[in-house]
Length: 171
Image 1 (cartoon, rainbow, N blue to C red):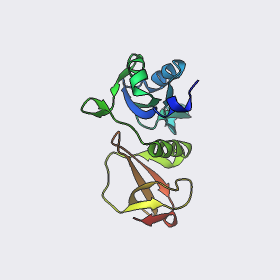
Image 2 (image 1 turned 45 degrees about the vertical axis):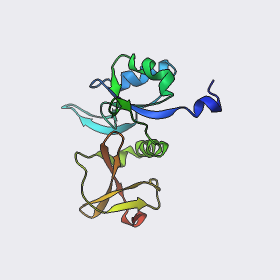
Image 3 (image 1 turned 90 degrees about the vertical axis):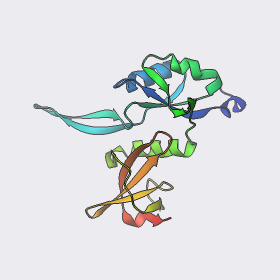
Image 4 (image 1 turned 135 degrees about the vertical axis):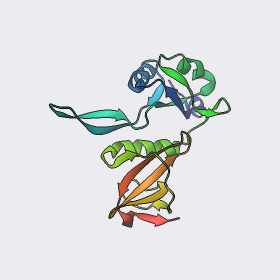
């Protein structure tokens, strides 16, 4: 059982996993009793004879874990498919709870989310209304619609979502 005292020492971290092992690592961590998150998106894949909706990781190669690093570090690293913790100078980087909340919010709206290859230069904004209220990011105009680009700084991954222009305000 997790007490309030133990819970205060837990933080979110990102682990890098072997290619196409995200789901297996996520399941293995959950089976070990480790709080893990694998944000998914639904995409339509087309084969010659059919179309099918499939669940793919929102961030390929990454799984998020909520652990006390001093206690669970080795247990996470010994999970088959785990390569390493993501961090700076061999020190795992903590992910702010706010960014984890945004990631889970994006996952619930996965039909509107797409991965971006580069971070575009543009106006920084704050979302004032709608399902993404509170997110800060950069606007990238595509045709007549606005796309809000959000950088998850801790893993240097960028995603974007369609958003109504009236929902955003300049920072």
